[in-house]
Image (cartoon, rainbow, N blue to C red; front, top):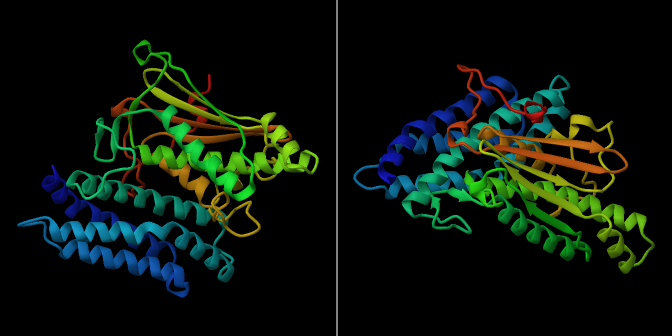
Length: 345
């Protein structure tokens, strides 16, 4: 009910904004030196004050406007803060890439939690309807989310971008399986579709970009030859499930990631894009942010590379609602992230 949710948000969301403000002030004593970090701090402080001052009685109009503005201001926060940490490291050598990644993981995971609460409120209030919402949708949560269907929709969008930018379309094949008889081969579970769309899009953009690049470099210099090479290097998406989990594997034959790159792929300060940003190659924050979306509700995202052959991405998501517990860093409580190792036999 919007009014009850507003009452909860009025107390909880300012706390989370205060945690992020404290994280910036305590974690980076020189935060005022970097314009991007200073802008993020000021934005958080401004939203914190607005949320504390606004009333949710006698009606929700003013409160809803503040929530809407808060979400709008957050739209560029990830890129801006990652850019700010990069600038900070150039000014001060003592801030390592490891520090930056740990700091940003904590900050962004907290941000995800705040945005989920505010987006759920707006959806319940009727302010916004999530794209592709179904009659099983409760706010931003779909109680019967179909991951295979989402994978197909995301694949079509990514392939459209590929064709627009390169004139080529990799081959993407999606299949679904389930060990649960009542699924009838099509697993569904309660989840936030926008999260799943983002994660699959980031994985597919990386696979599609790499597949096109290796096809063009391997085939003779002609479009037909490149298309033939793409057909020999399909991207496979397999969705599987049992009673407790949904597993999604995205596999490509794009040559893999060198072992020397290692965990750099999860760094906000690392990107393979060397010719500026595009719809296929962004600012380097997409993959680590996708892993945070998986972790937020108790899932995991891991990559296994076979250099010279290809890469497998494994997205593991809890299917049982009691296992989908919000994971937000809190200095007063311990928390644990899951990984693929938790599911190895």
